[in-house]
Length: 390
Image (cartoon, rainbow, N blue to C red; front, side, top):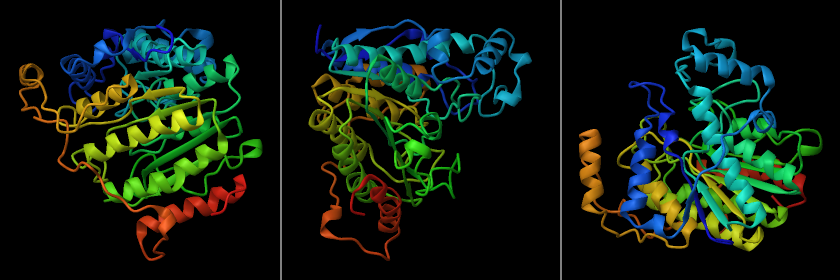
């Protein structure tokens, strides 16, 4: 199995359930896993589980008192302490919360271990990417920050440089906070502008502190940004920084909530542009990180039309068998979707926008354009700190 891609999976992740009225419906994980199977992608990867994250692993990022508070709420949801962000509207307490959150975290840590040790070149955990959880509290639908834990484990194993790229519509605030002063971790987040979206952080001026100054990068995109602008911003910032940093491992978070159908945000990105960024991340891993790539899921609340297709594309890219956008989705999966949700499923693996076109930054920029202003703000804030031309 050495060098083969791994899909991290455990049915227990579908127990990460905040209740029937919560937007983070675990059916999105179930439907993604079924679509991966229907497309035959699980024959191209090793589907493996991992141990739940234990106490010592969780404490690589999270405070001991917070972990204890999660355990208390997990055993008795009525005892949840809102001072830790538990039992709130965003993060309702539920029975078994600690256990299932530990499973998700363990899968991401297991992915990092497999890639570092050479058991796999790439590994994906689409149930992961819970990037808002803080060292001492839950936030934004996230209990344990599996992305931060995976990075912390890589550092513990000996990685000297880890790059983290987050393309979720929301700022990757928890990962940024965990490594705010750590020059070994470069965090790059592309997200909707904090003026218009939770968590109201991720301004371009947030660049890290102390030895980590210049290692936190934020691209705050105007609401309404579509495919061409999103890809332009990604390529105007991410490749140059990754080329300069030369990470030992690339960790990426692929929240699907940038999509124009997502009910909780205001970008206008298509499935096809999401796929294009997934491909770009794969290429960056091979060009600058020796191919070592850990890919995670994240947000995404159009749970039938968008999330399963986006993350099935991600699994295909990780597996080395890209799914062509024009691929017709197997009827068996579409029937499963209707039986499970009473919703009609999409027919193809595309929104009809492939190939996506965008203009490169090297050709120049328009100082009156809001998207270009956002990119320029990031480049001016960070690039000189890293010895690069803004």
